Image 1 (cartoon, helix red, strand yellow):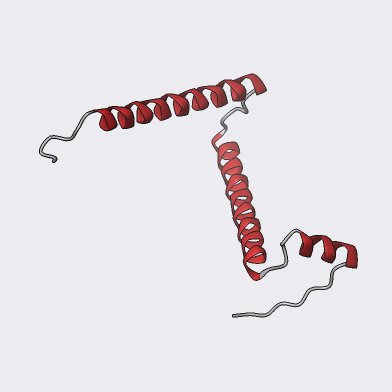
Image 2: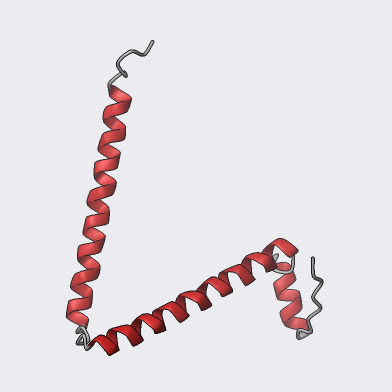
Length: 98
């Protein structure tokens, strides 16, 4: 385990403490989130480099929006299918059950 000491402006330290952000658990969560965002950004930049190297043309905002809408619709449909299956399982007793 490593102990870290940091210097913060008094107002920031008080606000962070009042928000519960200075506990070891909260600081660990903040650092974990920051590390994950940093890794995701690195991966995104690497992917962008590979796309550029492959000569894939950039997408327009309209194309991006259409892809996002399609992905969201697919996710909603899958969630609806899962909900329907759960409802059917709840209504229909299992074969061989009590």
